[in-house]
Image 1 (cartoon, helix red, strand yellow):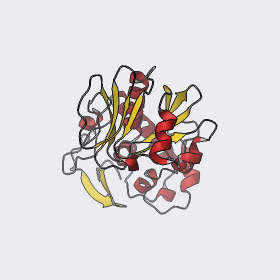
Image 2 (spheres, one colour):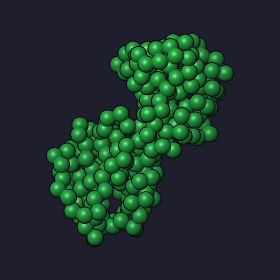
Image 3 (cartoon, one colour):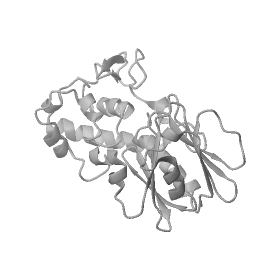
Length: 278
C-alpha cells in the first residue's frame, strides 16, 4: 500500500499536471470506485465542468478543491491505486476504474489492480470528514508540531503492544505504514517488538526524529517501489534501493553485517537487525 511519501509524490504530480485542468468528461468504469453518497451519478455531476484547483494530503488521503465553488474531490489509493497521465488517446487496460478528460482530450486515468481505491465528491459547504469519514480517525501528521516525543509518551503510556504495531495505527500518527515503520525503528535502534509503553522519552524523541528524517528522504526520491507504485508519469520510487532493513531479510546489515531478520508481527512482515536494534 502506498504510504505517506508515495501519496505525497502523487499529490505533487497531480498538482503539477492538473493545473488549469477543467473536467470535460468522466467515465466511471467500475462503480465501486466511487464511495461518496449518491454513487456514480452524483459524483460525475459534481465533478463534470469543474476546474481542478489546489491539492492537499491528509495521511494517505488526497483532496482537491474544485472551482469555482464546486466542492472537493477526495481520493484514497488503498493498496494498488495509481493515476496515469495520457497526453494522447490510448486504450485503457482492464484495471482502469475511472477516466477524466479535459477540453484538449488529455486524460487522467485511475488504474487499480486490486480495486480497493476510493473516490468521493464532497459538496461545497460540507466538511471533508462528513463524507470521507476515515479522516476523523487520523492522528497528527508526522511533520506537524503536534507530533512529538512527549505526545508519543502520553499516547503509549501503559501500552503492551509492540512499537511496530503502534506505528501502523493511523490514529497514533497519520500516513506511516510497514516500510517506514521498519526503517525508522532501525534508524532509532529500537527493536520492533519492544512494548510501546516501556520506551523511554529519549527513545521516543529519537524515534520521532528518525521517522521524520526517513519520510523526508523518501519524499525526496519519489517514494518506494517494490511492486505496484508508480508516479503520475509511470516512474518508480527510488527509496527501495537504499532501504536499511525493509525487504532485506537474510542480507547483511548495511551497518554491522549481521543478517537481517524477518518475522510476522500483527499480520505484517517486520524486518530488523538484531545487533543494531537491541
